[in-house]
Image (cartoon, rainbow, N blue to C red):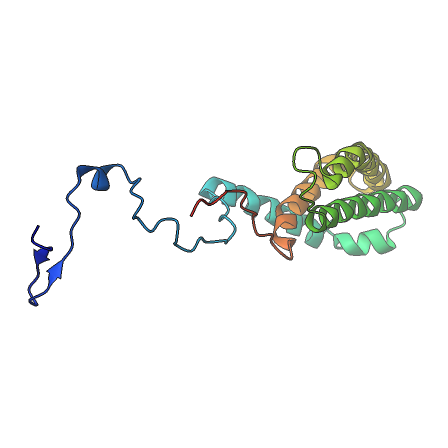
Length: 193
């Protein structure tokens, strides 16, 4: 054995001469186990231009509805001061939306804060809570949509339903951007080094 391959500076460099090192990647001397692992959350998938265009159209439609209202006043002014709106169904619909928001915030906070390791193979507490409140959230959403439709029907008649659906979809586009914190993924891998 010569001790290595000569380099230009008069020293020797050790080289590996086995065929398996370059092809298999399972050499024990490799430093793959000792490298730092990145604990950054995985990046969200990139949106295509079609999805971006759809989101823009939902938001632009919602802004149009909010700004132009009934062509005389904007939507917020109409909700506050117009006498054609049936107030009791409007307020009950707002209470339903508020209850829905509370349910989603509660389950989100519960999902973020409760991470128990002793329940590894079963359903976690927040998953059980999410499953049990899902029908209530659905019922509150449907009832609120119907109450809003009934309350706003005197102003927009048959256009009330597409108007409310457009506002709902604009909210669904905006809500994912309102996340205030992200969780780090927990790695369950076992290291053998």
